[in-house]
Length: 258
Image 1 (tube, rainbow, N blue to C red):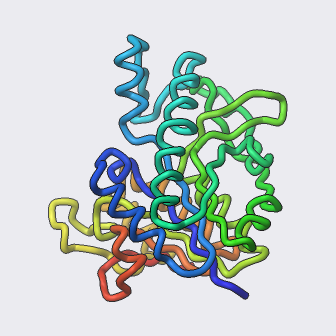
Image 2: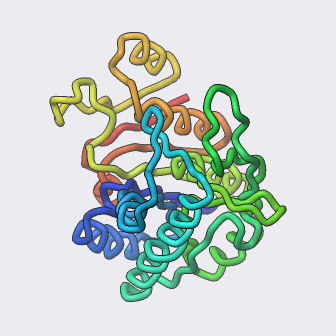
Image 3: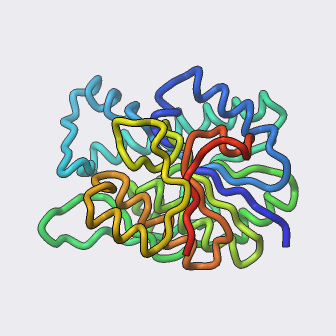
């Protein structure tokens, strides 16, 4: 079975023009089929501020009202996605940009209201890979942003890490999938103050211990939950670290193990 690389890039890369350009130059050179997933970084917040639309956050999560959804759609599916596609084309990597609505690839439903109403935020219910597989077989790289839909005309803001995990799981039926979460650190750190304290391997047991000890907290928790969800659902390999892990296997990074 052919190896497919599913790569998610974090906002820290998107927010840095030079870092994004370098990443895309390198990503374009990756051999074999590949899929790129991205969120929106800080650009949506900057756009909202410039349009005098209030940015509402609760526990680090964005509340997506109708005005905010419009901005996120413009920024994620428009400016960022098409900029990435254009730069990949400049590097001879033929690519097409997607939301979850395009090709009906990701169907979501509105996140249920419990204590907080997150607004137009979608939880993924179905992934359809037929269109993506046609592109991949023709050496075209899908570039997916973190917007999904509900099959009734409504778009949703959706967590990009979850999009990457669910796409990887769905594609694992046809490929041997390696899932990479690229961000600004060399991997998951034992000590957030020490960039050299990379935990090179985390399994289910050690993950539980690291959570109990308070080593893994905040934003890293849902990211790792997505990693373990993927590795327990036929995704062959899951790694976290700086983008260099894609190109230099000698670099330090974190590998997730069942």
